[in-house]
Length: 190
Image 1 (tube, rainbow, N blue to C red):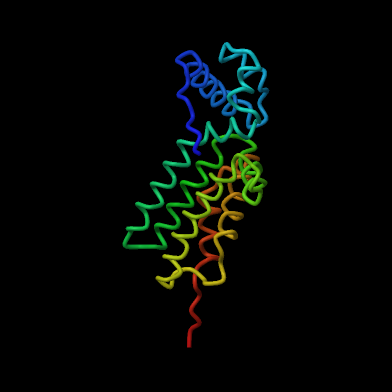
Image 2: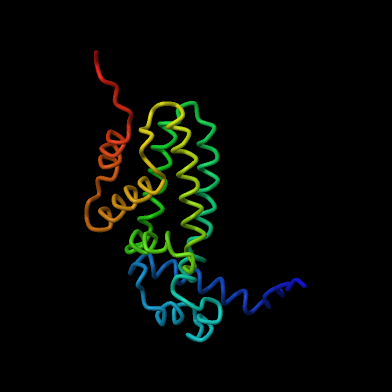
């Protein structure tokens, strides 16, 4: 027997949308550890309403990030059609850094969620990891990227760049370039 979820009442849907908007603004201003009480107040609902919709902070963060993760996945699929898998991988990493630096604290939160199937962010993390794996594999098949590099390595390195950006290093492009230099296949001269 399957259970079907009833559609939200109009007032519940409005509360849900107001909570998402308020959380997005609070996370942008204060980081992922923003006060949930402040989020509820900004959405003009009680804290109980917030917790009915989002039982945990990570559930709320997942909902706020959802559309961005879908957009990233679509972009990764488009980049797979590129004539230059190496450039496609670099472009993907740029998008991933921008996504991961959207909110202070997000890089650390994502890294702690990527290996935790119980985390509300796990599915999103796995979507980003899968997208990274496909683009990495294409660049490796093209002979541009070392074969000992894994998708887990890529995610860790991109998150490290995002974390550095959160802590005052605004030179992500240079750091991505250095990272790519380390990932590229090296040919020895004869």
